[in-house]
Amino acid sequence: MKKLLLSALAFVALIALAVAPASAQTPDITGNWQGTLAVGKGLRIIMVFAKDGSKLTATMYSIDQTPQPIKASSASIDGNTVKFAINLIGATYEGKLNADTQTIDGTYNQGGPIAFTLVRPTKDAAWEIPAPPPPPKLMAADADPSFDVATIKPNNSGGQTLQGLNVNGRNFSTKNSSLSDIITFAYNVHSKQLVGLPDWATTYRFDIAAVPDVEGDPSVDQLKVMLRKLIVERFGLKYHHDKKELSAFVLTVGKTGTKLTATQITGSLPGLGMHKAPGGLMLNVINGTMGDFTGFLQTLVLDRPVVDQTSLAGKFDFNVTFTPDDSMFNGHNPIPKANNDDAEPAPTLFDALLQTTGLKLSAEKTQVDVMVIDHAEKPSAN
Image (cartoon, rainbow, N blue to C red; front, side, top):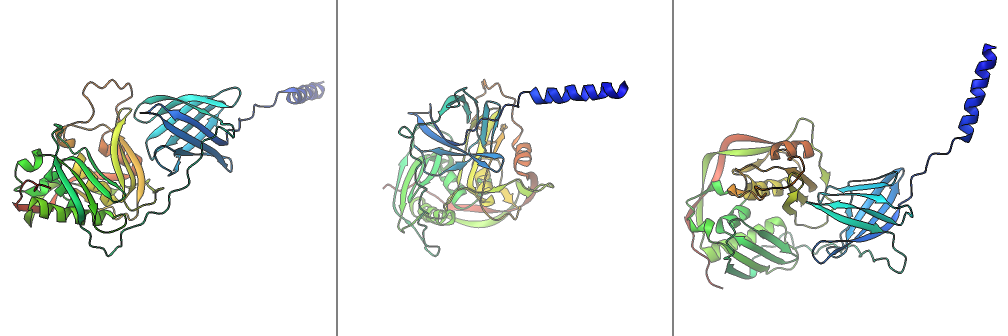
């Protein structure tokens, strides 16, 4: 009787398995999707989902901004929930795939949430993915360039910090820069390494527009060479070097190693900047070396020199979301005090950097090279 009962139970189990409905299959979202982000006049976005084995991948094309594809760091579909993240630009997306599998309604977040709908386009309505950009024509490595044309105009906007230092092809420009800003970038120093700089050199602000006298896109080093020549010619800069013990930050690789990835971008120049993000500020580094990163930190963010001791070669893409303190940005915190952000505050820069990239910033006192300014004058007229 006992054996018969067990057999009956096994038979019932087999029947249950036979009649149980098959688990729902994951919808196939591979292919092209498109939608317009409500930013400015609108940005047309194409998302291409694909499969790499069993892994879902995604690539973004912001076709009104650049032909450069941007690979997502992660992409997934769970039931009808679609997600992707693009760490390179600090963007995330979460949406719901509609029952007809032709529309994904969701929210794009890059410094703030924006409703964003993606649709599968018909062949006639599909936007064209731009052709990849041709390799940039680089300035000859042995060139000794100067600015062929350079205009310097006063900036009376009232801004207290540098608002932009940009290179677009061969066109270089700054916005709301001071002589101190330009020296710190051109000579790879922090403002505390400038001794004897006149007061007006930090308060008098101007815009620069300049074009090199040599064909091709300059490297960072060539750009700094041109700026040094401009400073000497138009600001009459004279200086000598000395040594001084200063408080500094030293950048090293943490005990667990780095979490950095090689850049996706081709080109000779880095992109570094910041924007508001949930819980704090996001610092973006695109196509940047460790020298580019430390130079950015000591020029715009931190209150002392930053020394690179990572020994890391190559160029990287990464971002770090952090909460600034009052010592940063020369006391001009870019996050408003009345911040209505509901997100949890981001970690400090030091904690966020270690967690996100594996890089460690440590405060130390060390002998640092300083520039003693012997002479500087307001820029000559154009």
